[in-house]
Amino acid sequence: MQDDLLSTWKDLLHRVGTFGPPGAVADLGFIAAIAGSLALAAGVDDRKKAQGLVSVIDRVLSAAETDIQAYWSTEGSSEDSVSATPGAVLLAISDLKAILDGARASNKADLETSQIILEAVQRANLRIIQGNVAAHQPTRAKRETEGRCWLPAAAASQEPLLSVQSARGPWLTTPTGDMWFDASSGMWNVPLGHGHSGPLLGFLQQASAVAAIDPFQMSTDISQTVAGILADLCGMPEAYVTFASSGSEAVETALRLGLAATSPNNGGIWSFPGGYHGSTAGAASLSDFASVWPPYRERQRLARQALPREWSANSVGIIEPVSGVSGCNPVSSDTVNQLAEFQERGGVLIADEIACGLGRASWPLVSPVVGMKPNIVLFAKGLGNGVAPISAIVCSPRVYELAFREGPIEDGHTHSNHPAALGAALGTLTSLRNIDFDDQEDRLDRSWKMAGLSPSGLGHFRAFSGPARDKESVSRVLADERLMVHLPTSLSACSSLILAPPLNMSFEEMCELAERTRRVVSRLGWT
Image 1 (cartoon, helix red, strand yellow):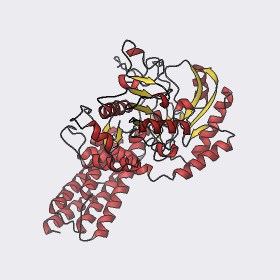
Image 2 (image 1 turned 30 degrees about the vertical axis):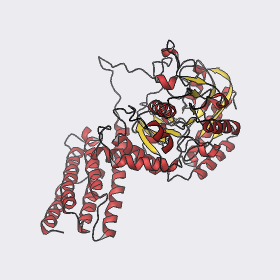
Image 3 (image 1 turned 90 degrees about the vertical axis):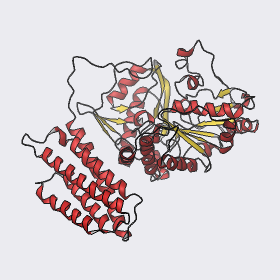
Image 4 (image 1 turned 90 degrees about the horizontal axis):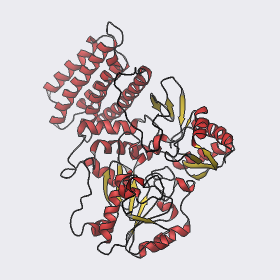
């Protein structure tokens, strides 16, 4: 290491003793600075990286000093010390960690130790910010002018059922301190529970490097990394993958690919009855729910609903391997056989794993469990753990080559292959792959049995059904038990509850969920 860098580093560390008594955030900043110095001492072999380390260590210490000043202000701990100054420390630590990613040094063990310390400090700092924000969240006074943000779904009540101030794991906390159990994991899109550090740090680290690009002319390493992971999970290592921002966009993109691949003698678009595939025009035409299509009632539907045996040759077909409408049960073996015959007739099969894939009903997806071999697989919902909107389209090489044989297709969006969202996705996938799904599902089954319940469905995608009840009365029963369950927005009556809790719950949380569910189901007279 160059003498000038060593001298600068010593000057930086001497500053630590001049700041005054630190809080926890500043302490973490100091630890990060020492970890950075350890990397320098390890002999980072790239002078530019070494100079970058010195510069960012300076930023870390400056951010820590600012946090101390905010924390020990003469008027008491200032609002800045809740999240602003800890956030500045976290960003500087994230930049320090990013510099060391891919770095090499003469002392490999010391470099790896530095990286381990920075990973721990980063997670700890994030946890402090989450705790601070939850503890200091103010009750907002009503302003003279209030923006009117409407809820999704035209038939939904325009008064939110629940105002949420903070969320952690499966728990939602209201401004009054009530704690609700989130049995729907948001809208089935927070599989790791609220506030999980993996997706949050993945998003932050990528956003601090490059948050957005022109997806039509640029690419990033992270898009290739996440694409490779999803292709492998789908059993199609040579697959082509692209990313959008929602399930509906993924469906629309898949339909474009399927239609292009089966042209010029395309036999139409088909969907399996009872499915839901999104609310945009093309996706809405795939559904037979009366509430989904009305905005387009004067338009001809793009798709027809029928069993796969009726789907035309050389056409495009889409199906959910597990559907909430079916009681969260998988498609039958007879349906799987019909789908295989459809593909033999030249059909392009799209598996909509948006709700059921990535561990919700089965890990990594449901299609291979039931024997399906789709040409295109769709993911969304849980892919970003709710941190950022992101969806994925995984396309087999054969269909991709057929679709693009006559040139490019205008299938992109402004936020296609969005780097920051992909950071959240990478953090989510990395964390999901660390879950022992067999063990989690065994423990969840045990909690259901202990509560005397036998829900239908697979994995962490379960349903309880019974005679139709007025939706308002169902909502009241759920509210009494502080159990959050997504109910159909456009129906006035409910005949089932679909539960989609976090995939990484503790056994105690599983038992709490089962007991609250037991009381709800008992009051509704369902099974």
